[in-house]
Length: 356
View 1 (cartoon, rainbow, N blue to C red):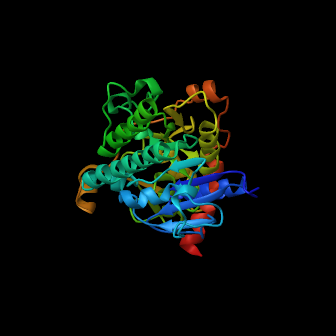
View 2 (tube, rainbow, N blue to C red):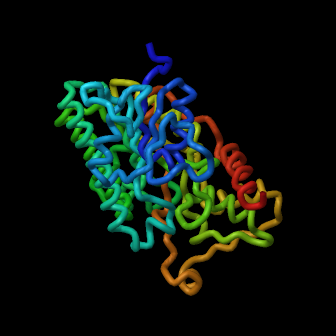
């Protein structure tokens, strides 16, 4: 009998959420294969096996989803009759980033093409595997995004509507959001038509240590922590700072994801996020407070922003907040960590990266 509880395949295991999920699954006694274009940037992977490759390549995906046994690895020559399905597949792999990457318009085609190609490859190859080996035990999780919610429901920073049922009529404010909406429908269509056990969540701004913190792809909490760690007199905040968001700490995201994945009554889509909504200026002030410095906030927008960066300020919607009623109803759980608690953990780590 194997010493491992179950097996899991984590796609996007070199990224922020994926690398944390690998650690969580290892702690639970799973045998884990991680797959990504690159190894985790800020820590060594703890996956039993980490395979580097491009999930846009359908042949590569076909090889990834086949488990060859605990002693056989991805590159081992094992007769196909011994292949087994993974118990769980977590699909985090995507072309994505923060506002500076998603909202400029310069990356729209790549975002849509790359992410959709990956999702189609994963679903179709798992369907073929199930059909060929007469199995259907693999649970599949897809990490969607709150960016798919309609722009017209998020114009009021004090009262945005991100209830799951508000998704239609569809009107995301970015091509990234449109891709996420299409892909969640794709996963659920493969469930209806081919019986794949797919679960779908809409993530709301997940943050924490060991995530991207500079270079343009970082999310707002990491950006604010970096700016506060680097600054001497002020930190720059894009826009007027009144735009609102909620942010969920990585550990609670993993807990919510696993609870959704391992039950059998509800597929989603469902929000996974915090309901603690704050203006971006307040998020910046939390980072300042944690730094212990006397820093001012410099809001940059309009022509001043264009003069400095050469393009309009990429802000996204005016307000976004997770609505967790459906998750609590279906799964009986809700997050408990405050934003400040999560920011304290994140600032400590980013400050070490900046200042040693």
